[in-house]
Length: 421
Image (cartoon, rainbow, N blue to C red; front, top):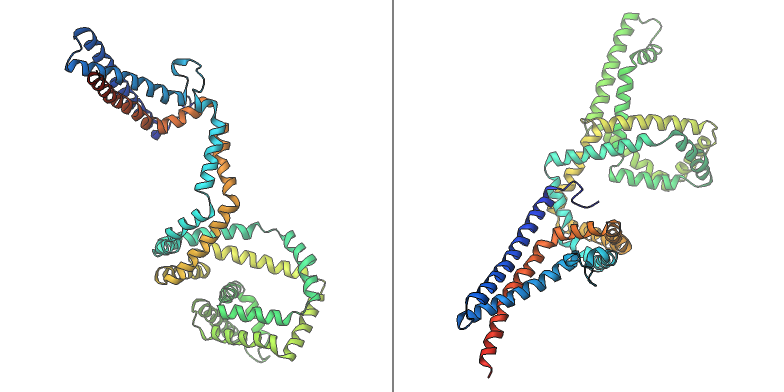
């Protein structure tokens, strides 16, 4: 289907008007040269100044016609005549498409070219500047949470069960686990990565306490003295429940809560003991192996996964939740470092440039085939029309220049003719 039959974009309409205007201008100069030539040929004796005018008009027509033929031959047969080596684009579009693809791959999609472009663009600094406004950080956090939420929801229970029962548990049973677990836990504590789990645990505990006051009451009253009056038990139980809720909420909402510091300290000590204390390591291995030997462990892990999946999904969807707040804070710190630490930004830029270099080297030639494949699918006439819309107006300057240069050459040749004996 040609562009005349397809829906034409506003940009193509503007190009079409410009092409038509330039064609009209070039044709007008040719007609003007022809009129001048006819008038000077029939109404003057072609001596003196009129001789120069006549020669200029004649040569201008020749130049205009020659360049009209050259420009037209790119896109169609001039005057519809099947002259050899004309209508070059419609008849050789596949070859032109492959040549253009090779040119782009060799000159624009080379690894070194892409690498230099990435380094000059300074993407890290620009990303930091873009992330500085809070609205932009919220946009990133919202999209990241949406994608992560969808990914978590898409994980199937059967896949988790198969992974746990067939891969994870057998491998764990065969290996020595406590030193690795201790090293991993030490790294988690050092990086503060466990804070998210503490947030999640505090949030889940608060929700459970809030939604299960009867269970709390039963546990507390089950340990009350037999002689204690019921109204006293109810009052004490209610007070304990409210204090527990307030304390857990404080732990959840206040990162500097003493309980969090105690958890950090205990986890760090436990991580060290798992790596270097023989007694702790032996006890940990024994406990872990007993747990791994339980037949219902797979089901328990799956139940735990379902709870974690639900909690993660809800936390990710909560615009005002702890996870979203921590994500925004992390993005803010990242943006600040990108804009204030040139060495850090330069290292990131170098890594990005290296990755872009590798990708361009691996996939650049394949990407360039998009050009040849697209051109190959075009109809020959459609390809000619598309290309002419983009470059045709500028090619009409060749016709204009041919007319003007032809006139000047005609004047020069006529002058030399007069000077020769």
